[in-house]
Length: 362
Image (cartoon, rainbow, N blue to C red; front, side):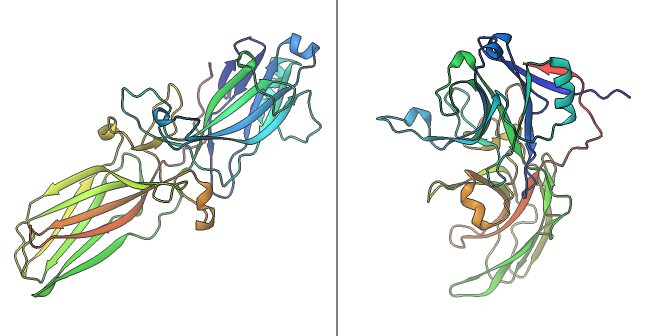
């Protein structure tokens, strides 16, 4: 049986340095992250000159609009997470992957492998969607593998001998479902007897992107107020941890219903409302968090950010969460009654049995 692989290839503008990588997405399992591996191929001239070549893992965190930068103020932080010297080779023990071993045999003596370990506490790749006409850099967290020739790893790299390839740090859904989300809220009224009860239950805690969410709603009206309509929403929460007040929400799916309404005093109502959160319905909205974009690759809504504990929260640039919110409208004098349930929205872990076709992408 012949197993085929996909290989990404990028060449420096001066054609002296070439980077090969077999993947651009690296899975974060909370406790550890898959190592970043690849091959750097040098031209004979660079080898003869004994030029130093370095590979670095760059985390670019932009937390403000590029158009608002002025007077030396920059809303961007560029962090070098890992820096290794590829050539001349350092005496470092390295566990090569099967892909690296095959490429080394195929590319010859000017090919040099590298392996970089991404810190587990580093944030997942996520960017905030911009308007269609906005061509500035988007806010968010993006990762790059940078290869360059220089005197040291702190040397200012020259553009003609530099390669920058975007990668993504991603998280997949857990294998087990959590506790079924359920909440019960009550509201009493001044100068009015009785209370209004709203119970909301989701059919499960973990949903995959594109999956339909079933929202079970039970209303018991023991007050003398009248429920006029019910509204269900899926909200995306975005927390930019660099700012004290950097939390905001986007409603990415919603539905209103007057079926069974008006709900008079002493009556009850049971119904199920369905919502499907997806990027297609929000593709023109600025500020919606999407998964870190890679050129020529479709993206989706950002997945829920899973963290090991609250003490590691500050290390994450942007934290994304999701919640279902149900609202009862009682009219101008009665006000509203709201219930909220958080849930997890992620991609399922792909099967490793399916192997991609052979392909080299530049």
